[in-house]
Image (cartoon, rainbow, N blue to C red; front, top):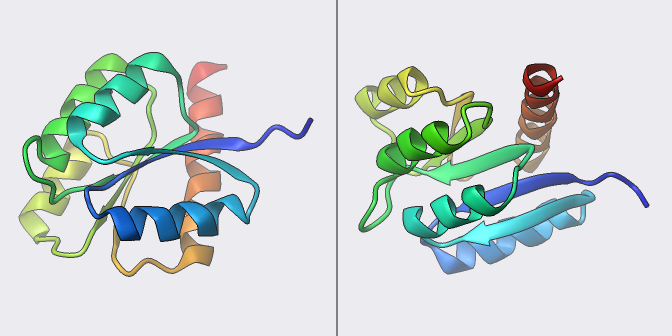
Length: 128
């Protein structure tokens, strides 16, 4: 069996999540979904991922709060922040909290897959 990269997609916009998850699955990625920061923390507690795609603007626990807690649970986690309304301040804060990258929605799928590959390589390097 092929070793598919595991990706956790965290976003409260269900239609966006379903569409992006399907597009990533057609590129041989194993995609897991969480629709809130709380669900993301449960998912991260249960298994490791090669990359975590995290929306910043979510109701309840924000993406920044989730990012901080994810990094506490899994310091090696490679988080790529996705946002439709990024402020420079939030982007800087996400990077300071350990995000690998920040991409704006709508995201170019080819670019996103390249970033996921980079994240997987970095995670492998950190855990080797």
